[in-house]
Length: 319
Image (cartoon, rainbow, N blue to C red):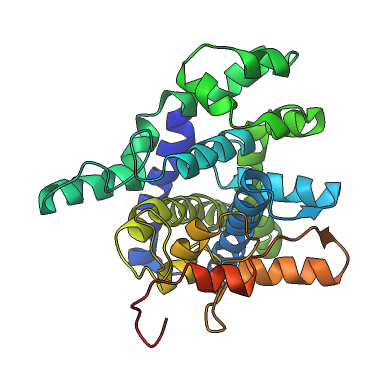
């Protein structure tokens, strides 16, 4: 039921948004709420869940960590710990047996590749038991993190939680993480309240919920999931990364930097994905700003020598 509410209702809302657009078009406030909420929640996913919590590519203050956790949770892709565990598992098994969402693993021929694409885009999410069970699993073992980390049990939840020894021992983080449902609801309430206050009407509140809530939620989720499908099948591979990851400029813009995926898989510990001057990495720019303000430190970046050593021998002039 919870999975339907988190996934099904926004999808119905997206359908309603398409119908509303065909009937009435879209108003400037609708666009502002859609774009604004998209950028906030995508920042939470890419800068927060991905670069901070999953890879720990920099350190920052507790208020910023909390803000990034809340923004990422508002995207509705699972709690911080679930998202981080699945991503760490993916990096340990990228495009090899064990990868939960590879579009290419064991896929031969065009039809199998098409099926793999859709599996990687969203079907894996519906077929992964830990997605629905991980929150309850963490709550059961919250009092004894070392015991669950040392457990020999081999359920999917146990395998995933063993990727999180650093995060699982952070009681402050666990408390925020276990309020995931509240943060998801906040992602719908915020544009609703802003829309209502800006227009002074229930209609404005409803349109805020539709465009800044439902439509935004669906777009952020599918664009984020496309990192699994698109950037493991379409794009360039200027660096030797030992997997099928690819750089895709369109996806880089839409995901605030994650689309430079070949760069990322080659240097997963880097806070930045823009290894060339012309590669736009919005999340990297935010980290640089935080660093200059003294709000980020221990920022990890590969050396020029390390990047040169991983260049493929033959590449286009633009790479």
